[in-house]
Amino acid sequence: MSRILVLMLMISTYALASEAEHGTTDIVQRTVNFILFAGLVWYLVGEPVKNYFASRSQGIADKLKEVQKKLDESIALKKEALAKISEAEKFAQELVVSSKKENKIINDNIMSQCDTELEALVKQAESKKEFEERRMVREVVEDVLHATLAQSSESFDKEAMASVILKKVA
Image (cartoon, rainbow, N blue to C red; front, side, top):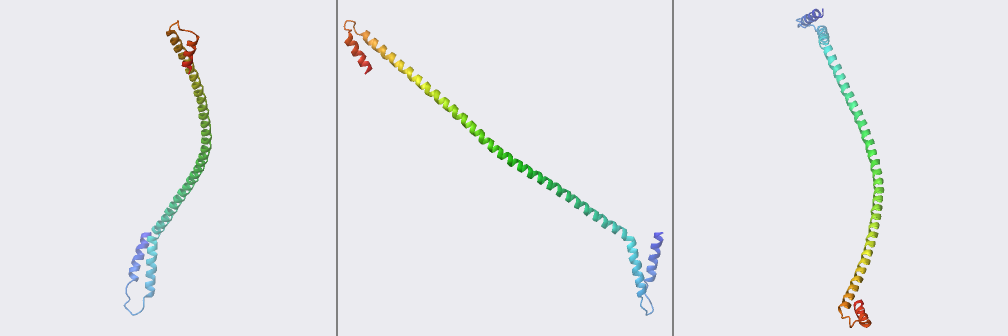
């Protein structure tokens, strides 16, 4: 049915578009031709144009929704990142405080160990000093005994023994 209507419109357009041979104006025919042509164009091209612009509008709306969704996601990610940054800053502050405490404890332990080792070294030095003093006294006594025994027993008297001891002590 629509094909027949289109065919009739095309024929009437051709028939009414002919030139007038008499001197009257053909404004009515031209207006009818234009209305028929506009109606025909609207009938043939109207739906595809409407569909094109509707689908284009829908495509733009869909893209806008996608962009809005991505924007919302990026805002959420930004909030998460800011939250993580604040948590990291708090952790860093706690870490600084705890490291200072640990540093103080370790420093105190090292100082107490150093004090203990220093006391042990002082005691060891004193005991070594006492040991060396006893060894020196023993050597002096042995030297005195060897010197006195080396002298003849005839000339051994108190005076000679006292002089040998005085020489070694001095």
